[in-house]
Image (cartoon, rainbow over all chains, first blue to last red; front, side, top):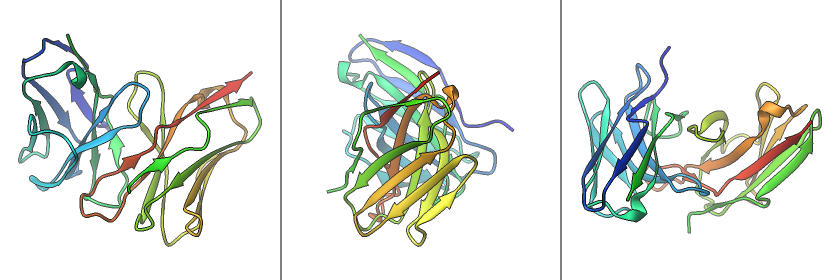
Length: 113
Length: 113
């Protein structure tokens, strides 16, 4: 069975550009969450979507946005990239939104230069 | 506030010994906890979870203990193997309605052969 898949695996962008990261959850999972992990730290929550609706948002600027599609895949968009946005972006999927096992993908390594 | 902390940033053990990784949490409203293992360049891997109505849960070679009185969580790994070397994160799900996991900064486990 396929786990959580994210694309691309690596990405280099220039300051001020826009980026779109993609995530496909485990088959049957309806909840997708996005996390940002800066080197040497634990993941920080960005968004959660369940049944195509936003169910939670972390302390990130409005430059960060996301959406979930009818097939439960998801996109994370970041506008006006800053050097500080360089991080590993992780997607997690779960059956339901809360208090259920959350499984992570391999992440997208974003480098902003 | 919401925070998950770890007592030791690095733990070094001999192969075959038992390992204990500790975690303190500050949000008494948290009702769900997960331990993750993260190897270099990979996303966090689900190890074991526990709900707040339990104080102990066992998996294959791993045991999680929850002490709600002192807000402490621990992960015990039996007969530690070189493949267990990684960074371990505890994560809590505070009942804030955000449906987000709050991660600590992690403990690096080094297994000496």
